[in-house]
Image (cartoon, rainbow, N blue to C red):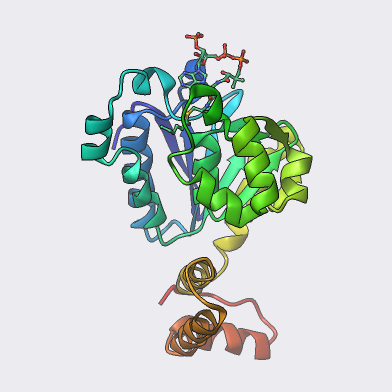
Length: 257
Ligand code: HXC
């Protein structure tokens, strides 16, 4: 598929989606929503892909939802279309998504990063929920995912003041998994993706599903859910191969079955 607002490439075992509206700091309009969710679904369905990297061209990861597109948006239109709900399609992707946050991740950009599974931040990354400055509030999960990720104190601070948080603070707060040198961000993201590509796709989908359940349910239900998935993993060829390879002191050859 050809896309207007993103670039899509494939590496050994992974796909890369680059938000590519640099003149608008990769602001997220309806076309970006369509392109990203379509590309992600295509990569998700591609057996040669084990992980997806999401990053932004030039100065920004994404500086938010497109303010120029929303400026004249009215309640009835937004409500009828359930504006922003389309991004939930990204949550349906079964393969791990790595956000390589190369610059501004503000508003919808921060929310998009939080929809991903592993967040890597470059030393130049800046996170924030500046919607308050526009007379609105986060609309793609900022008040919910940010609060779960970094707690009420910092989520309130960021959402009420609209201030930006740098990569150090984001890592300290638990929003991002790692900070990497700006110039090495994409290479490091590719290394993480390539490492995931050496694993069983079945097991990695189960890991993603199980960790996400932790956000939705009680500990008791979550532990049971994890245990049942673990039991199910015993029915895969990849479990037989992974454990045989360990015992035989060789590298596993997973077939994703
Ligand atoms: C549309 C945007 C944009 C955005 C930047 N641009 N952010 N266009 N939507 N969210 C455009 C600018 O208009 C400008 O276009 C170009 O990108 C470069 O931006 P500058 O402001 O000139 O760059 P700089 O001075 O370096 O400032 C960078 C910045 C600033 C601090 C990131 O652009 C900024 O504050 N952007 C808005 C961030 C924001 O509020 N995001 C949340 C959006 S609301 P021109 O044509 O002038 O060159 C949201 C969720 C809403 O995400 C949910 C509730 C409905």
